[in-house]
Amino acid sequence: MEITGTIQMPDGSTDHISAPGDTYEDAKAALVAAMPGRDLPGNRRKG
Image (cartoon, rainbow, N blue to C red; front, side, top):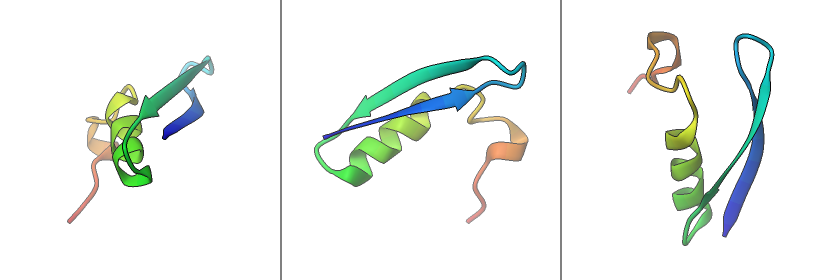
């Protein structure tokens, strides 16, 4: 399985990203890990 998406950067530019995985959950986790800026304080998940 592969999930693809388009992300928008703070400067307004866009980029296409994709992530493979054996299941939807694995692919989603890989996609989130591939997103730039995911470790910024405002983007951290609580819990």
